Length: 211
Image 1 (cartoon, helix red, strand yellow):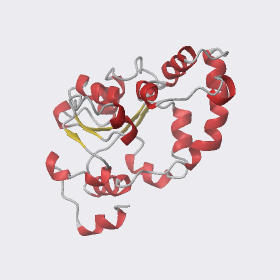
Image 2 (cartoon, helix red, strand yellow):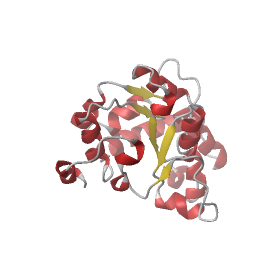
Image 3 (cartoon, one colour):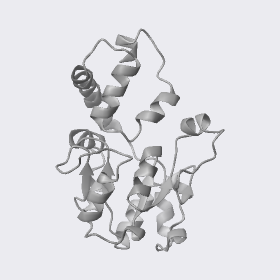
C-alpha cells in the first residue's frame, strides 16, 4: 500500500510495533494519518481487504504452536482465541488450519464481535474470552501475546501473560529490557514450559509436533 500510495516510504518496525494488537479501524486510521495517504480510512481498509484475500489464506502456525494446542486439548485445558483481527480476517487466516482451530471448541472472540467496545490495551477481548470459558478466576488465565499492548491488555484483565515478541520488535526495544508485566518472555513457543504455570508436562508424543 505504501509502494502504491506512499511514494515508497518505508514501513518501519518502529511504527509497526505501535499497530500490533490494535483493531482494524484503529490501525488503518493510524497508517493513513501517519503516512499522509491520499485515501479515507474506509478506502484504505477496502483496498487492504483485497490484498488480505490473496495473502492471509496461506498463513501457517509458528513453530511450537501446534504442539501446545494439541497438548492442552489432550489434557482438557480450556482454550480460547482472543484476537484483534475481525471475524472475516480471522476466517481467512485460519482457512488452511480448520482442524487445528476446531480444538478451541468455537471459543473465538474477534475485535468486531458484539460487546467488544475497545481494542488492546483494553481488556475487552480477554474478558470476553474468559466469559466464553465459563468465567474462571483471572489468576487462572494465561495469555500468549506478541504485541506490547496485548501484554498490557492481559495485565488490565489481571491475567498472567507469556510474551513472544518478534525479533524485529526486540531490536527496537533493545535499550529497554522491560517485560511490560509479562510473567515470561520467550524467543519462540517451542521454549514454553507448561510446568512453569502448573500445567501438565509435555510427553514424548508432543515432540513430534515441536516443529
